[in-house]
Every structure is written in structure tokens, then in C-alpha cells.
Image 1: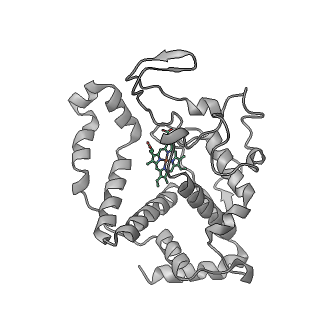
Image 2: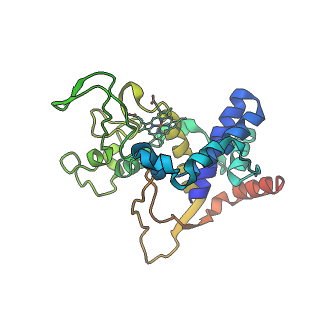
Image 3: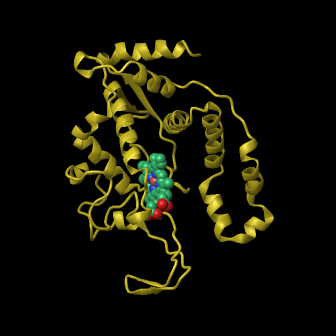
Length: 273
Ligand code: HEM
């Protein structure tokens, strides 16, 4: 599943740049830089930041790879997600006539889908330690004196998985969020997008994109575990954005009433390959 979601993310980002800039080369260059940046691996970069010794010896050639980032090139390939986005743009279809309406205005009505997304990022916050900030002057946090120039870390994972704050905290229970809008809850018990003036400016976009993608996957496809006997392994791995330890592999087949639409997509994509 990772490569599919990865394609979706990159395609949306490069398309936004292409639309803003009209300069297709700029979007292509951005895509290449992004692929290379992410592939460098967050845990190694963090190590280099905090243990300068690794920088001097050139940890796993990261410095060199970073310097080379902008020189690298990769072939542009039309993926299924490209096709979906094109189809959405060129032929918005109507769900009520047995077709699909990939329209973000419908998302507001799908409060349970929204609650599923929020419950997921409560249990598995994308940035478990948020993003470190440095105090520009002396201050007090939770009664502790914090001198200027300190870099405190916020253990968001702990807060969002704290038994004092959450009922049945290990239970995947979207119902608890059906009432709230956006990704954040009042107070500091849930803040997957951070909080305050340096909180995530991409929250609105992220919630819409995840909602639309999830909706497409649920509406058009039936999903099965690869091995029906085993539950999906949700163990966390290490990395900048809290990856899974084990790859997520799943089987799917088109829903019967969606066959016509999916056939169109396949036909559409063949015209590009
Ligand atoms: C599920 C998706 C996302 C999650 C969970 C997420 C989470 C976060 C978090 C926790 C922070 C740090 C906030 C803090 O320091 O307190 C952050 C910062 C930021 N995010 Fe996101 N983000 C997501 C998607 C996006 C997207 C789609 C964009 C851009 C289109 C974006 C752009 C940024 C930027 C620019 C910052 C730095 C803001 C600043 O330092 O002033 N994020 N995000």
C-alpha cells in the first residue's frame, strides 16, 4: 500500500506546483528532490543532527547524497493515481447515478470517516515528538525554568496514549471523535498537527486528501487481509514520520457496482502507457 499512497501524495504536491507555476520543469524538479530527500531516511538525519561526530565522518554518505540531491533525475511515469486525478478533473461523475462523485464537499457529511482518520492519528501520530522548537528567550513550562536556546521535545505519542486522558485508550474507537471538526481537540490532549502559531499549515489539505483517498478505496474496492487467519501487524518502526515496522499488504477487488467506473479508469490509463 505504501507505494500507492506515496504516488498519491507526490502527484498531488507536484500538480499543485505545476498549477501554481505553470512551469512543468519546476514540478518535475520538485518531485525528484522530494523522492531523494525522503529516501535518505529520517532516523539517520536526526542522528547526524544530534551527534555531530557522525557528520565529521560522513554518516553512511548522507552528506554526499544530500549534496547530490538536485543533480539526480528519474523518469516520469503515469501512475493509476495520475489517471484518477485526471479523470476527476476532466470527468467529474455522479454517485447518485451509479457513478462516483470524487468531490471534497461531500466529506463534511461523512463524520464517521472523519472520526476514523482522527482516531488513527491519535493512536499513531505522524510526528510522535512533534517538531522541535528552540526557545528564543527564558520561559517556564509546567513549572520548570527553561533557559533561552533550549530545545524541548513534546512527547505527543505519550499524551495521545495516556490512560489518564483517554477511556479504553488502546481500543480503536472512532465514535469518540464524531463531534469534532478538523484534526485537533480543545486543550492539548490531541494535537496531531501541533498547536499555536507554529502548528501545521497543511492540516486542512491533509484532512481532505486523506478523506478523499480513503473514501475512494472504501467506495470502489472490497478489502481483504492477505492471510485471513492473521490480523494486520500494527507494530511501529523508527523514522521521521512514524512508519510501520512491517509493510502493509492487502488484497482488494472492485465492488460490483463500481465495475463500470473502474473499467473507464483502466481504459483511460492504457491510453497513457
Ligand atoms: C496527516 C498529515 C500531516 C500531519 C499529521 C502533520 C503534522 C505536522 C506537525 C505535528 C507539525 C509540527 C507542528 C509544531 O511544531 O507544533 C507540522 C508542521 C508543518 N507542516 Fe504538517 N502535517 C501534515 C501534513 C502537512 C501538509 C499536507 C503540509 C503542506 C502542504 C504540511 C506543512 C507543514 C509545514 C510547512 C509545517 C511547519 C510549520 C511551521 O514551523 O511554522 N503538513 N505538521
